Image 1 (cartoon, rainbow, N blue to C red):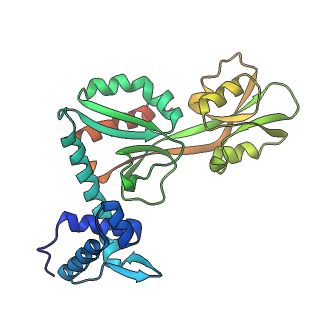
Image 2 (cartoon, one colour; image 1 turned 120 degrees about the horizontal axis):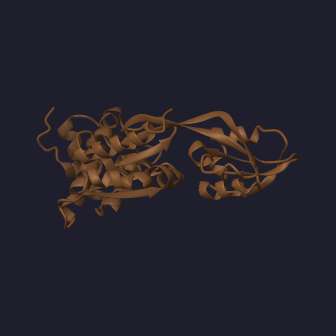
Image 3 (cartoon, rainbow, N blue to C red; image 1 turned 90 degrees about the vertical axis):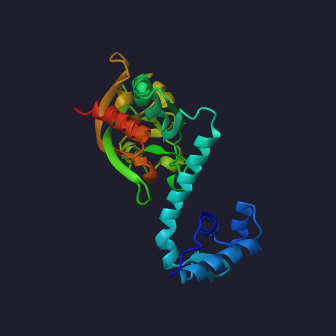
Length: 282
């Protein structure tokens, strides 16, 4: 197999066709014309001596040989983007990394210890992003991510770093109470299922993914709801509520891009995230 003509531009085209499913859409995403895309894919197939795409119902679907290398192409694209960002910044001594998680973890677990992180890594520039939905690590939307629950698939490094337990918060007194719930997209989480399995619940009073807002509502005894342990601990002892531990938990996973495996700053940031949850262990 001759691979003397193999270069990153050709591989970038293969990655774009895999991502978009057509030569025309790949051409638009790369700001090239479709003829160029087709010609370079054919040239690469000749070089490799194997087909990379099959035409099926108007789509370009990667062959088994192509699928075998797609993960490596994603890693190369991520590394190239990382290099471009570093060379494009004015401060080459600064190392920018992106970490994403849900807002409650960012606010209550990460924020109080940011001083320790920046003291250990004074040349780190951190982009801390929050989202209720999982970022697409394969599209390099983040360098590291803290997620609740193990991803089912993905070409990234993953490590379980902790566990969140949950508490049921009820107003004092008897009678049916209205409930505070997550939005419909999060209704299948273990804590929501445990809440909805409770007896004597009234209709929904509040729907929100903002756990800070939910904690305040529950703390005032206005609804029945569920909070993770670190937020349940924030409710004052004199609040007019009854707290009951639920027999549900969520594993916390740290994901990182594979090309950062030996990156000093990424390793330090990963260790810092691990230490936050290790400190919570009984």
